[in-house]
Image (cartoon, rainbow, N blue to C red; front, side, top):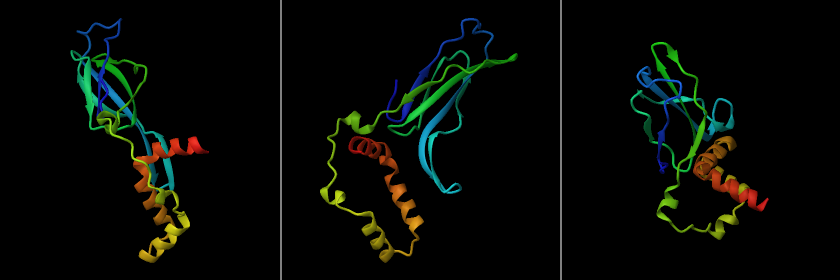
Amino acid sequence: EIGDTHVKLAWEVPYEANVLELSFFTVDMSAYEVVWEQESQDFFEGFRPWVQAYDGAARLTFCEISGLKMDNTYKFRVKSRNRAGESPWSDVVQARTTALELKRKAKRRCVPRSWLRVDLSDLMQRQRQLDELEDLDFFREVAASLHPHVRDLRRVFKHYC
């Protein structure tokens, strides 16, 4: 089951393993992300390094991972372990959380026409009048405000370009 901020995962005990011989199952997760990275002065786009999302007794062959971002893609993998060591990682599965607006079947709002007439150079001049920000700081603010809409912006650019 996949929700807007959670994923329920289930797996099977490997055929060659006896469930009584297993002690724990570990689930790792990797999240897709688009974010501005200060150190590199560039955007990072891709899957983040694997992190442990669940570690539980071998008698349970399911778990729920919650606290995920809506409308985002995640990769998951599972391994078992006992006193003798660890199994290899399972095949990677990918899941995408749902968007809350799809769940509610909300109507899509049109972009106001005034937004389409805005020129970035006009915004920069106005920003300079209001704040003492450097150009790079201005673009960082713009990027941060657009971050939740990156996927929609890509669709628009692919459609019109």
